[in-house]
Image (tube, rainbow over all chains, first blue to last red; front, side, top):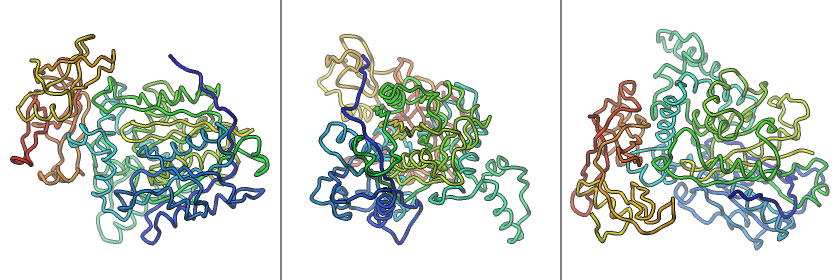
Length: 421
Length: 139
């Protein structure tokens, strides 16, 4: 029953911006979006007229809950001075802004608009950890919430199913955490910028100063095994398996392919686009993959004519360490049950054959949920243009990258493929 | 078994409050759904009937949660006293999300995927505020 998808006309990214991600007491959603927007405007090499933006698509999960303020589309369109141009909010939990991106692409591909701003924003850190957990849990399936599941709990349960089926252990998940933390110091916008080794050493120093007997951590894994520094949140998910609470914003300027060169000599083209929807945990026959990701991947590969091996690097939705492994398998980068081995062998490191989450991922870069999808695409765009500085993927002739975004317990999954020509 | 109750979450919860784990079965293709579905996702028929589950099954995935939502914290669960939630495959085939009782959530290594379980209905609160949570416990 598979339909071959196609876009009515090509769409290109000619500018992008992203605020720093972190916990900001003194910045609100408007401040964060302003930061991302100003960077986007400055990134358009041949300049742009803000008044030429035809419409805004904005991803936001739940500022309604976090900030007691809803209806963010017009707040942002007014902020950047494009009102009364239309503003549309998209909501797909943690995949909200990948959906905004997709709607923006459709709007241009249909011929309706020529220039569209797509973005995302979320402001979470002004709530307590318990309140944030409650807010995020609004995106679970109702039966999960009643059974006491939290988001770390959902992914903890998925991990036990994966461990049972493929023989992986918690030790393998630590490889994901260590890898993400080794990329993060190279990303100036990341919320956490330390390697696990640096954290271990500074913790050792601080304990020494307090006169506490020095812990016997031989290496990073030893450090992560210590429940004193890495307590369980929802076993087997521990603190260092989980992404943080973050504030942030991201945006991109999309234009019709035929006018892209008016803005930059180096547009990045949207070649693959996919989205799927999923069921709750109870309705999955197998908990070791996400049906919605597989569907999204098939759609994106079908549209682009590309295969998993053509994707040179990718950002995937590592809200929890186990998630990164599942997504890499669902996207076809590695066979089912092989993802954890690939991480162990270093295949997904920045200098490996398939770099994954060069930004540090959600784990280190941060996860302001509504902003995440477009921040992942921002990383792919930056890498493809060769502007990622110290974390630049060292593959020669970098041309094709992907971004995978997941919302809820796999309820909304997207996969987007970008190309440099 | 056939009753006039609609195949809804509200009916499902009402049955739980009566200590019954109920699902809906498609009369056209015999697919079984727990919790009940009003529309069969296999053949798209809306011709359903209620079926009661035996209440036995096995654990297919679980987690021991240290940082829980407010209603679990209110029951006394916290970092020092974690609780277990899991996915249970019923003997009849469908899977349900449930609280897992009678296990030591402080020692997750003692809990295992595949362990046999039987249903238990946890009644909390009274009257208007009363509700029943689906749980399974180790046999």
